Structures are given as C-alpha cells and as structure tokens.
Length: 126
Image 1 (cartoon, rainbow, N blue to C red):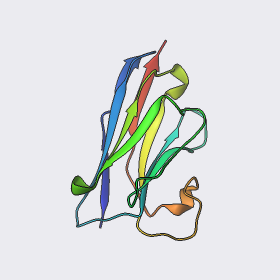
Image 2: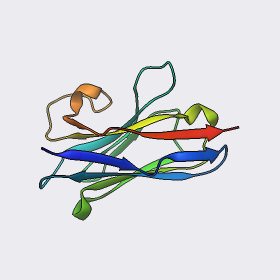
Image 3: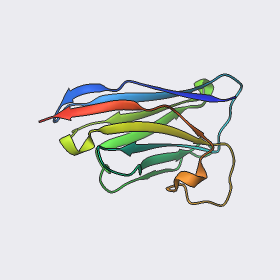
Image 4: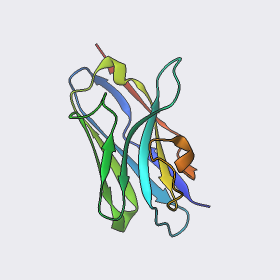
C-alpha cells in the first residue's frame, strides 16, 4: 500500500514561515496530482492547494494565495508546502493527499484523492 507521510509541522509565531513535506512511501508511486487540505478546530477539512505532476499546474484557495506555495520533487515522490506570512487562522491539521489517476473529478474535492496522510499539526500563535 502507498503511504503518505507529512512532516514539518510545529509551532510558529504569526508572520513566520514553515515548510511542510509529504513523502510517498511503501511502494513505487506515481500520482496524477497531489494536494494539501487542512482542518482547523471545530471546522471541516478544506482545500488548500494542489499540483498536477505533468506540467506542474497549481491551484490555491483564496485564503492562502500569495502566501503559500506548493511544489514537488518527482524523483522523490515528495510534495512541499511553503507557508509564509502565517496567521493564527492558518492553525490546523494539514493533510497531504494524492490522486493516483485522473477521474474527471475537481481537484478541490476530497473525492479526487485516493491516498491520505495522517496529518501534521501547524499552530500559529499571535
């Protein structure tokens, strides 16, 4: 089975930066797209950003546009989330997700993804 492992979460002050990593492991893996979602306290899991392996097209939620950047390293089957100018409202558990293939499903939907990581906590203090 493919496993996704997030790392890089932690506690940071408002205005600071963090970089999250998500590495696929367990078996040889190639994805159509990978994404980050997040779930804040008492909130539903929401889309943050996605990247398509072929061509590198990206998409961002309005709330993070201009502050976050997603990138990938195909050789390592790893995706990164660079988070800058962090705000307290960015506090959440961040989940990595991977879509194994194109299923004609909007990539902002959780249903587009086949594999999920366990999440990594990001806490932004005021």
